[in-house]
Image 1 (cartoon, helix red, strand yellow):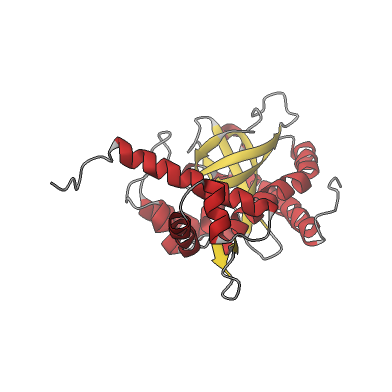
Image 2 (spheres, rainbow, N blue to C red):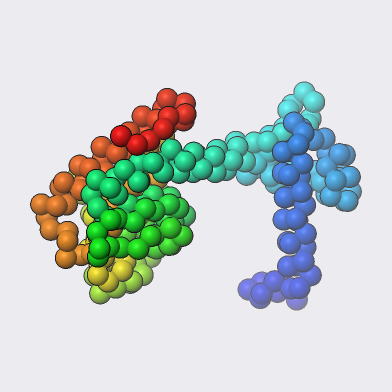
Length: 270
């Protein structure tokens, strides 16, 4: 009898794991050589050529490999190159941004952080603590729902409606604190305000007692790839200070972008 609706069998799971392992083996091989033939691929993963061909065809359909019509050999595709480029961009923006985080922390006396998107969450990849006696601790390594943080809202605001609906298929959003936005419709309205203002705010939406202001950092193509933000004790962020902090991070983000556009060889400071 068909087993539609039943969990995958152990054999099915083993087969899936084996296919993933084979695909990763071929992708790793393309790191060291420009292209692979079907027979070479079969020898690498220890399968019949027909099995290797089916796997390569699947990878081709997803854009991870492309086939040369003349030679019939497979090479790295746009999806794989996109993953590699995104990884390099993250490392590059973090390197360029570091001295600017230090300078901005000294200027504002508040904790400055750099965040990158991870689906419907954001990860803080670098942070410099402020110099005030009462300050927010380093955010490095912290992961928070994007809709519950200023940095996350900035990154979400750069996405189109279709991508936003894919990230948030439900009309309800997860609650982090009593002030977290929990309706998708409310998030959409908030993101439109972020686009108009050029920066986002968060008041105890991700963490009780903390407030933040963030703006986007763009790559040379104009795509928002990271968020630069200031996080402060909530009692220190009144409306007038929001404007001055937003101006400060936007100036600093502009300097980071300028260095990225100059070939990613500038130094921060200043």
